[in-house]
Image 1 (cartoon, one colour):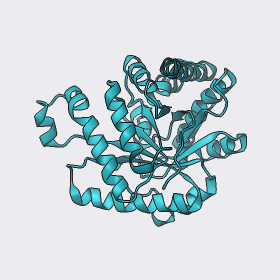
Image 2 (image 1 turned 90 degrees about the vertical axis):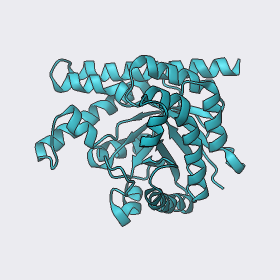
Image 3 (image 1 turned 180 degrees about the horizontal axis):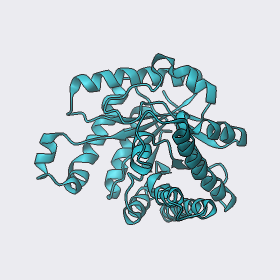
Image 4 (image 1 turned 120 degrees about the vertical axis):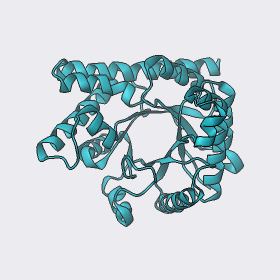
Length: 307
């Protein structure tokens, strides 16, 4: 059984690739050498904002980064040398079906960077395409076994996109889907994946607005002896008010150990820098301030839980 990970984990994810390159820079693949350098430089800027947060009093050992090999290989190596908790994305970017970014050679790429976590993003609805789910579960179980056998930690970002029939149940309302259906579907997806041999140390889950739904997610994550498994809440690129609400709700529940808020932390700052509206120093400072804001919100919630 997996040992899990239950230490505080305040993660800045900037492993975005397809959506980042096309949405923020308006580039198209394949990139030119100069375009690749621009994207890599922007990720270095995000990393500098993270390092500023460490200098501004991030609780020791809690700060972590998630970045991709394609644009962040130098960042991963630098963070490893500094002893920072790192997560490396191993999935192909932008695909509806989980595939390894480097196919059968995935293990050598993980070993080259020696991250704290191997991370996957997976879209999995238990009532979706069953053949698709089966194929994905097989690949994910392979990765889970690899992590177990090599002593590496495994982080699983679970997205549960609605089926057409599920959206019909809520009259097409994404908000009602999130509140009424998604929490149960998330729990069912986690149980199915566990039965298929997928054993994350940390589940990275979409924000939930109700405490009891957060408690259900923790129970699913820690089901049947998985008592050390942690959960973190992701930001979904939402506005500041929603992120604050999700962080506050999750922080009040034992088993939620932190967060992963990416686009809401860095997107405006990088866009401003890219458009020459912000200096590099202004952009990094803005990212650091946002990340520090999330840390403070989450820690207040944890303190309220303990009190």
